[in-house]
Amino acid sequence: MTASDHLTTTPDVRTIEIVVSRAARAPSLHNSQPWHWIFDGARLHLRSDPDRRLPAADPHGRQQIISCGTTLHHARTMFAALGWHTDTTRMPDPDRPDHLAVVDFRPWADPPAGIARRAAAIEHRHTDRLPMLPPAGWTDLLPALTRLVTPHELSFDVLDDEIRPRLAEVSEQSAAARKYDMFYQQELRWWSGHSGPSEGVPPTSLTSDAEFARVDVGRSFPRAPHSERRADIRDHSRLVVLSSYEDSMPQWLHTGEALSAVLLECTAADLATCPLTHITELPAGRQVVAALLPHPASPQVIIRIGTAPDTQPQQPTPRRPLAEIFELGTPQ
Image (cartoon, rainbow, N blue to C red; front, side, top):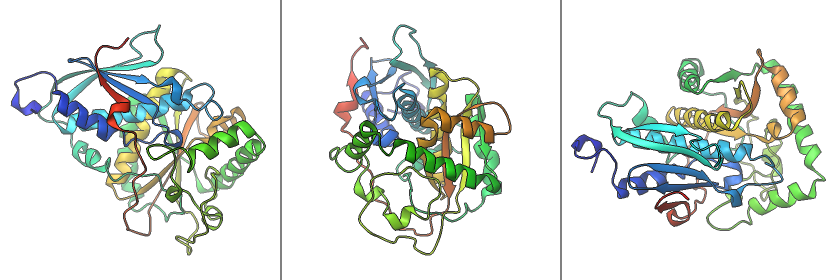
């Protein structure tokens, strides 16, 4: 049953399951998928999964909350495309910081233009770690991206090309600072190719030495076997920064929602994207990025946006089964 039937004020369980399954396509740190949904028959609750926080890369849980924000926005986008307005209460219980959001529903016959395109983009979006060409139609796309970020009270800044060498240097320094951190390296290796069939970064999503050498700003993952995809180009993506005006859990959640909106809008415009958080994981890196911005703010996520010169479909990254991320009942 859909909202257009005007017979109920809450989606049925099958609709909820479809939306949660699609929302699970959202990106997360190392594809850890640290979210858990509970439907109590009237409202949908989002919780973070404490067992899926990455203590080496994310000791304070900031990136886990950002990741949960991306799946929240994916879900809200899907519900809107199906004719449901979502009234979202973020951080509803101060005593339960893992209870991130409660979603109430009402029928929505005329969602805004663009919702259907972004909902359709969920199935096609993927993280592209290879070098990219400049983003086609960039000037026309920028106002739309800014409008999508603004409701979340974040800043959306495009870094000038003159700044790029400095950011590339910070990216290298971030990798060097973690090179001999065995806790971090062990965690990274486990989530990159060894974590199992339903989670983590698969080998097909990693780059070889030759490919990584042509991307100046990127996280240093374990290398894939030798390959030379896009051998004739170096990375010419544009770099943008999502920043908050305070560093708090609600702002981290909003960052994830804004990140989702940007990624889906870019995907709908046939552009490739790659979210980056390795530079902002360490205080030194965040301070450098903050100094590059034209206003005081706390950098949360950097995004590479460009055009992929090849059009062959990408193999989807694995996702956890619905039974592991969704349940019926009342949050405890």
